[in-house]
Length: 372
Length: 89
Image (cartoon, rainbow over all chains, first blue to last red; front, side):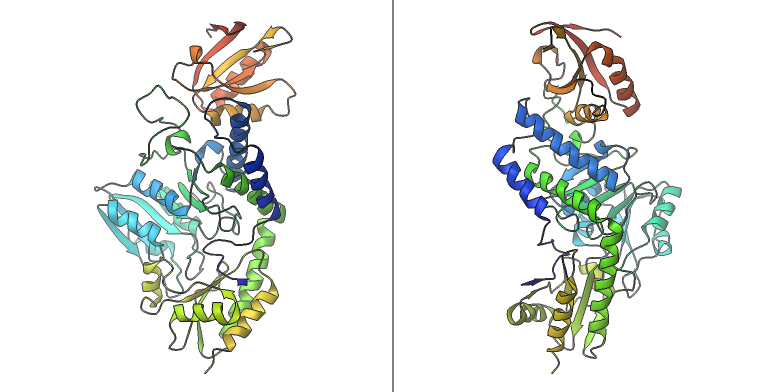
């Protein structure tokens, strides 16, 4: 199997991730922050260690500003529902995932969709044009999960900061491949996946919350602290982390972040650019293939083949050539509306650090066989 | 909890994350710094976690806690096995 569905989740994980999770399950997978025996305390240290690594990775001053979630969707929901109410106006981009669109539609008083260009690029100007007096939040994907196009979050962040509007970035596709610094990029809230380009297991993700942002809680319960109180703790990270954490997953994520740091984001990005360019060049040379997205992008390449359904293309790539891809709408109807592909969907190749040049060349060769 | 007959000081935090951050801050000092589940009798809020240090380290821990903006729930000296006295500062 050639796995090119890494935008959904990375399949190949570093050996250190797997071995540490195995070690954890065998020897110390106790419940962190619950009681005081040796194993719960050890687990507490492991959880903190991961929090600290993530904080460092994203330029976050205090590790207590990082909250663990089960995925990016959970992080986005915590941020949006914790900040927005029926009096609020929200600006989102035309490339957002349903995990942004749906919570905004369900809880905001009103919202405006900032237009992206035909490559999926969302300019700072398009965001600025949508802001109103009661705008309570701006949400932009760092890079679309459909087009892969990277958005100018630093410029958008500057505008948001100048206008005192919280800025939420969906970094599901970029955390681990593009350098993110919440201070430099003026990010108030950063939602990220642990199981994609940070190479943790599924069921891991997180949210950075800037110290000046106060979120309402959407989940309350046991935090292992302040147990005599009838009300939820009002301090981070406890206030947003009720219930048992995915301890074994976080231990794995911790090793995934080590892998990123050891390999370096610079080297990861260079390889990604190289392989993505090779893939785009190969596909673009075929007159029956249309590739979507801009030049400056992550390792996401979506395409269509003349008159063929995107799901059928994916199925054939799987069944006839052993290549895992994703067809359809990628849970991102807004992005497909922007690209004009909502009726056909797109077939998506997405790469990871474990993808090879040979994998890319094989994928191109297989697509070439679709020519009638 | 005593070390070589010397009783230790418990500095109480609301969150295990705060206590662990403090412990890690001093990880290269070589001094004794530990995190424990706070004994119920001195925990004012139900469950909490304490950083446990020798007397000489208390002021340093309180200083860095203030820098981090962490509220301290109390400081206690263990004066005997399971017996504590609150230290007023």
